[in-house]
Image 1 (cartoon, rainbow, N blue to C red):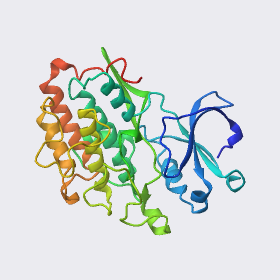
Image 2 (cartoon, helix red, strand yellow; image 1 turned 60 degrees about the vertical axis):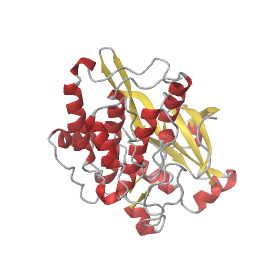
Image 3 (tube, rainbow, N blue to C red; image 1 turned 30 degrees about the horizontal axis):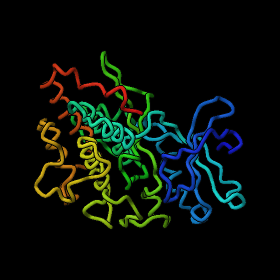
Image 4 (cartoon, one colour; image 1 turned 90 degrees about the horizontal axis):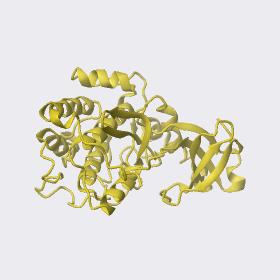
Length: 321
């Protein structure tokens, strides 16, 4: 479980999101190992209402997945006295997609090809598939390569994130993709404060289909209702924002006949997949269990058609600030 006294505070992360349940977010260090972690402080009123469990339990449940933020410890023993409880989690040293977009915008630059867009899609497809099915990275990869829908583990408590946006997709060198002349970080899904699960619904911690909050600009067409395919829609918005280097979508919902990708990204597979993820009717979007095989098939076709690109261009050296 851990204790607050096991960590030393380094500094507040002023650029981190507050609001919602986030009273404070700090960079801390383990006294035992020296490893850096994030401490997220959750206000007493939210602890009293057990809302902190909506953030805590998904991280505990998903510890085996590379692309989901790692739980380290928690301390809620004295939250009534000091006014907050604490969750300690993985520190992603390269920031988040929002910061990457900020850097590219400051340099008036864009991604040179579809390679990193496919990387983000691939990492998040496996993350959302894990939330939906409980399967690990290797199992999901095998299903994707053999073009199979991923089956759900018996008894798995299905999770819906409900707040996928650039600031909640973090970047780290751990499990990094390295090829000669190319460097891409691993993309990690975090901030489960608005998530819900089958267990949350059964225990009354969240409504079955109601969206309890969210981020303006990233609302789904079916709001205030929500389902597993709503996460797919928000992932599509991430790719749209990253391709256009914008912090939030700039074309409205739906996209009024305009394609969410700029014309410079001409890969038909990517354009078709993004259109499918952004369908107004959630029933017409892929399921999280289907998305890895779709991403694998279309990404592989792009690689073969663009073999001269060696899988995609490197990110700029200044991309992480």
